[in-house]
Amino acid sequence: MLHIGAHLSSAKGYLAMGKEALSMKADTFQFFTRNPRGGAAKEINKEDVSSFRTFASDHHFTSLIAHAPYTLNACGKEERVRAFAIQALSEDLARTEFLPGNYYNFHPGSHVGQGIETGIQKIAEVLNMTIRPEQSTTVLLETMAGKGSEVGSRFEQLRTIMDRTNYSEKLGICLDTCHVYDAGYDIVNHLDDVLEEFDHIIGLSRLKAVHLADSKNPFASRKDRHETIGNGFIGLDAMIRIINHPALKSLPFILETPTDTAGHAKEIALLQKHYSE
Ligand code: FE
Ligand code: FE
Ligand code: ZN
Image 1 (cartoon, rainbow, N blue to C red):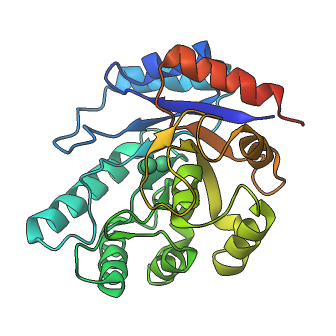
Image 2 (image 1 turned 90 degrees about the vertical axis):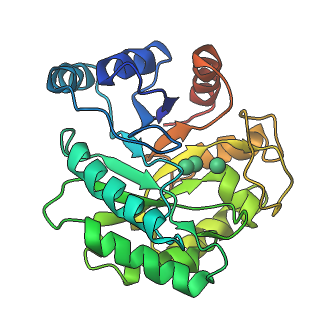
């Protein structure tokens, strides 16, 4: 069974997102934990959470992904940037426990001139300050395109972050197709090799979710501009191989494509049509 959904706006609450997901024949979705550009988190509406949990189990939803705000930079240079990262991560991880057992995805960070090594070290420190051994949420490090000074565009960097974290078993990876392609992993012509390399460096058991998006830019461009499925440099054939690859096919796939609900529904139908059990 193909587990697939899209990134949705969380403005109307969990039950509304569940209904929107169902309307596009999805069984999962991703949402921002707060305004993606930063700011305070909304109060959790317990009634909404509980009606959503019933809805999700009635409709056989799989794991969901909460996405951290883009402004969260765990390896920022300025103290207030790091302070926000620590505050947002601990608050968000407390809130995700209202929907136990799901994923919390974040961009490892941008080292803004401090160097990769310092970036990696600071990210691991922030994770050690915020991950709690008793939490049921798995924190996912997202594979990045390598735009600017982004940390996490090489599998080795993600591995090192995990190795320096106290509760490494609470960490996993979310593979973003646009990002890895932009970072120079050729998932179009050498998908098997890329996944073998991932397995060798990080271990495929740590791969928990996939962000699906085509890329507006050619291979290794480090640009991070998402395109709708089949309309960029990755192409539909490669996407079909990705959703059907034995190492990936049972994971939740989240569309991160620049389109609306109707567009996502079409992409889901297209990918379902090309998915083999
Ligand atoms: Fe992301
Ligand atoms: Fe992504
Ligand atoms: Zn992106």
